[in-house]
Amino acid sequence: MKIAIIVPSLRGLAPVQVAMAVAVQLVRTGHAVTVYYFKTTSVVWQVEAIGFEKISFFSRIDWDAYDIIHSHGFLPDSFVALRKPQHSRAKSVSTIHNYVFPELKLLYNQAVSSTIGWTWVSMWKKMDHVVVLTDDALQYYRKLLPQKSLSRIYNGKNIVRDPGTILPQHRQMAEEIRRNYSYCIGSIAALIPRKRIDIVVRHLSRVEAGGLMILGEGPQRKHLEELVVQHHLQDRVKFLGYIPQAHAYNELFDISVHPSMSEGFSLSLIEAAGYQRKIVCADIPSFREAFTVDEVTFFNSDDELTIDQAMLEAWRDHEKPMRAYQKAITSYSEERMGEEYEGLFRQLIAFLPPAM
Image (cartoon, rainbow, N blue to C red; front, top):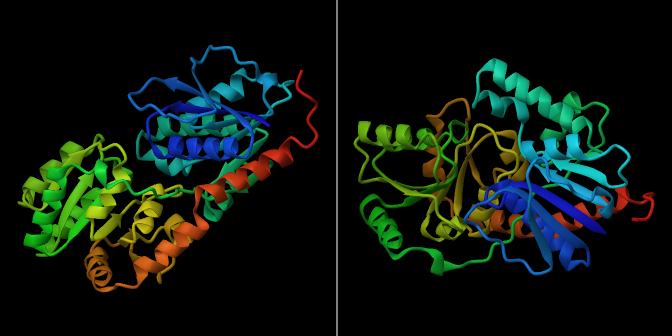
């Protein structure tokens, strides 16, 4: 097969990581893959046998040269839906990485979020197939796209440990937190309202144990920094900013925390399990689908005070991390994900005319 994968940029955000992992697996099984991207970033993916090409919304693509066009995100989906001719032989597939309306409402007012949301839904309706990340999302999108061909493919993430990427000063920071406050909590997430990192900061204001290392950037950073000062937690909460290959920092954490109010299918959760970390996460559908109470420790999403007990339970439990690790490496590998996408693509092109 010849496959075009279209992403917003090459920045290492979760949807791009997923797209690139799919591309690598497809190339390894003998398919030709070209990755198209819109925005230039400092991130460079060095993958043999994968072509990369920067495009604009008005770029011309030889659509009929491909069997599959696979898009990720609003701009790529819009590009495919509006620029790909209806008579093109290539089959279009979009992977949806979120719950569209709940997430947009956290970013925009009602009018703007509704306009963007319904515009995006109209783009998906033009696709030949849509992939979602969980069974819960499958139910959600069947209501929005009742006539659309949908399937569920879990994200996959292979863990390649690279301790050399951890800066010495950050190792020292984790050691100081552990020495002074018993254990180190880690959060790897964009600093946006949906991730609810403020819950963890307020948790620390109520208890004496634990310090927090926050990896990530975003519009909420200033608010979070002010919250830390308000609760006099400057010695216990450290902001590290954006860290390339941030997953390696799981090595420093005793507990990995995931308080999001909504997720598609969290790569950072899989990464934490891959490092055999103790995990505390919000009781939301995608987390519940990924792991059980025997593998991670949940707290009530509607009652942030319950995170206090969840942290204590996770700190005392030494068996869940191994069970979560076994789940991650067997159920959420990049190879398994690639096989499922390859199988889907083969089904879609079974009756395609030959490429000209």
